[in-house]
Length: 261
Image (cartoon, rainbow, N blue to C red):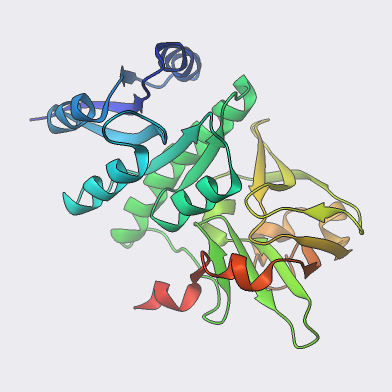
């Protein structure tokens, strides 16, 4: 029988491994760290992990190839990517190819703490959904999503509504407060769009599915942030934007219709 640990951190920078181990341990998670993908696979054969944190830029086998190998081996452990060579393209590519989240380096204690909790909760929710013990509401078929977190829907007038998926919101626990940008603010694809504080005190950042200028925000969320939980795809929308790189950025969004196949 395999041993069990919550988290595996894979990074060729020992200082990063030690940092994530310290943060995870402070949060009560059991964690193991390795410096390369080959050792990571050995650990995965011996241990049942709930979450993997992997760097993108590593020698011999990078994070993208690691992700592909996990899929080929039918290892469904949720994976979060991190890299010091932060580019929007890396973030979007990792999400498109199956990573559940992305965190840039250097990261703060609070940023890593929130992403670890979301990752663990994500795995728990998916297992419960697959066993039929919980309900996850998929985004409407005509919508598109960035990873599992944010969605977009183009309106007839050319503007785009964006929001958070039901799965993302459920990984936060109960929503307490939101911190939103004002109209005329600029959003960049895969960069933070809104801060959401949960009842447990953790603050989570939802990334934007597209770049664009905010022309309206959902003021109802300020007074009633729980609306994000109640109706994430309609009344719980977050911003209306005018996209600036629509055709290019749409190529790496996932059609929500694929969630039903």
